[in-house]
Length: 431
Image (cartoon, rainbow, N blue to C red):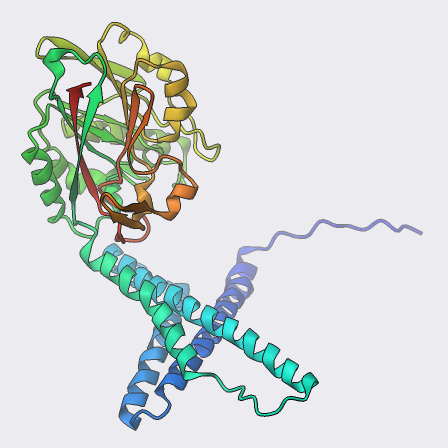
């Protein structure tokens, strides 16, 4: 008798996917959302107990408005009714749902911990024969859970409304050993991570350009991620960013998002053309894009080597397009070498190990996670510090420096909480 089995399963066809899999996934998601909302509602109901009927009805209605709106939105999206809707509107709607449900998850977490405590006490009192324990949910816990949920709700909503275009000037004076006298006082402005495809508004971006030009920089550096994935994203902003001025030029490099690696292309040729279009956008803006190369810039009679590498990361999840050896060639005799490298992990992975004469490296990439706490002179914290050792601001190792810019734009969440969009001014002084 043949006991072999055919373990290969037929691939689901489009009809199965559209008629069974998608509706089932949608139904399960809706059920989970309703379960989460029902659980969170227990806090609202406990807190509203004893309120006037009208006020209690308003509280209940406000709570259930979110799941009803989300269910309608999910059904409309599943039936392609949202196709053609304005991209900015979609971003705002998705972000609002994200904020609401992040907050409700925190509410439910507090309630769940309290429920575990209540169950344990009920069990203990049952087996111990202790009477009189009130197992009902306490009003204090309901208040605490809603308070905890209100923290991300208010902060994330404020960060989306107030902070996306709240450009902040960060100034650093870097003392450089053996800096030529002619270069003492050299002013460099750095911007990074524009992510033009994320901008919901165009006019406020002009404020950043005014802030940059007010610094009267000798050099302006852009350290990558002009777009999210597609070159067309920057087209509405070419005239704006083309207005950046510097005495000795604007220099730029590519970031990990600029290569189109996060977009699904129909043909390899389309991806290649997209990169060429992006390079052309840099030219249109008057930016000198450095692709593993350098420029010897004469400033007050002294040579400044501006080196630019393509994206290079020590993290394996990001590609290594950068070639610092190639970018370095020809800059050996310059008394001051400045490097533009998008990912700050490059600094410790290569720069400090093999190129001790590169004085200052400019990076971005981290965005400061667009979330954290910064009080100058007291605290600088973001969850991104647990991923990137060097994540924002100035770092030093012996006579070499790294500056990590917090980014001018945003990605994903259309806002910032605690970590504001940055324009950096670095002034070089003789040590």
